Image (cartoon, rainbow, N blue to C red; front, side, top):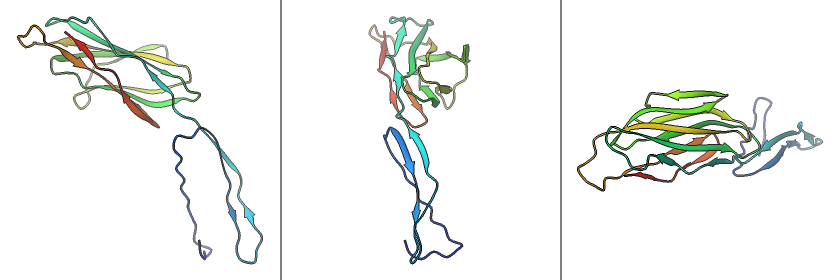
Length: 174
């Protein structure tokens, strides 16, 4: 590393990806003509985020102008540690008008009624190990093109802190 004077410090950043288990950190330093010196031992526990996302469903499958359609999915923390800052987003197709989104959190039904940046955004602060919640997005069907085979397709995106994110399956309403 070189020569350090008394006012300098070395900072070492270590990034570990997709590792599960204990991480032990200990520093060792020795200057020429001196004994080795060791830092305190610090141990961190690393776990892989295991967020299970169910298949996205919609009811009813066959929709008419003016009817409401409900999209549902369940997310579950299958890991050992708490998952933070879970974000479920849905950019609704142009044929749909957002009504509301609901989900259970801390034993109470939570309701989202506003769009953020033109998309439905459900933000859940945390899910403890084994905890799950079902998210429902309700929208009203607008004017459909004059076709017998008009389809409305929708899916959602899920992200969280230290979780790469995923997209749900594509659901089609006719």
